[in-house]
Image 1 (tube, rainbow, N blue to C red):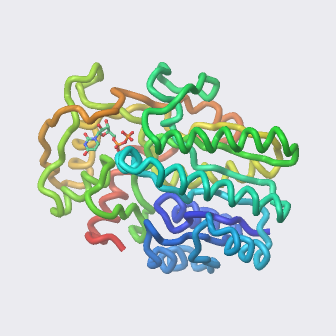
Image 2 (tube, rainbow, N blue to C red):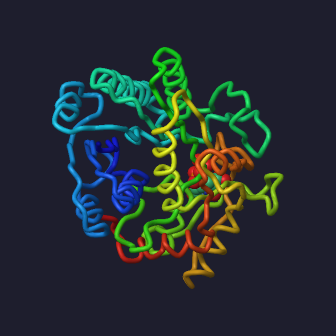
Length: 336
Ligand code: UDP
């Protein structure tokens, strides 16, 4: 039986694909390449020496999805496909709700039709909203999000919990990611944002490689260690291993389980900038800017549940993340 990765050509999907192929899984990718490049597939094959079937389709296209399921023997699904830019989701909320929720519903309907019951979902720490104390624990009450992107994650979590309540054979793992950064150590795959990056590390990397003049640090007057925002950064290769562990868990359980994938440690923006500069011996000019609207001062994971249920912990260090990101960015200054 094969594993279907929707959005498998994206940043987290491609790293998970490499990890699964290396572990001996057979993988099928469904990706419409709306926010990824076909070249990533060649790189995945190059790194692993293995083949992967690719369907260049929209997950919301039911007929195309049925064709995929009828041609491939799919045993489980990891659902990465979805729009993911917080700012854009505030400008175009309907587009976000339509795309992210429609794709998930279509996928679940087709899975039901073909009797596929194992599902791992790309959720996000953003579902903890703005009122929960840190560190975030899976048992905390979830009451709402601060932007439409986050709401799509929260709504899909609810849809999946309801689907599990109705279908006792369904097994769902809701992976709540913290801040994935870094790249595969080969430097052949990595994050390739289109346009000016929104997230911190892709921005830092573009400044370091000379594509952008300087980083704006959004606020230095937060109640944190040095006044700048604190997040829980996790190496994308660790994250990929977390998906493989979640898949193995889903094989032997039923019901819906939310699990944080984070390191359990927080790092400030300045700590990131300084570590990136030091490890890679490259300057990262920056200036302090006003706070970015909607940003929380500080959050990080309680990572105990992943350890208990999945036997998984983040192993790679901030230095590893910075080094691998630079290896990718400096060898691929224009992305794929
Ligand atoms: N950040 C920043 N400058 C940037 C992008 C981000 O100072 O150009 C800060 C941001 O305020 C936050 C941290 O870096 O404290 C991580 O931001 P990112 O957008 O990567 O992740 P998120 O805020 O979604 O956790």
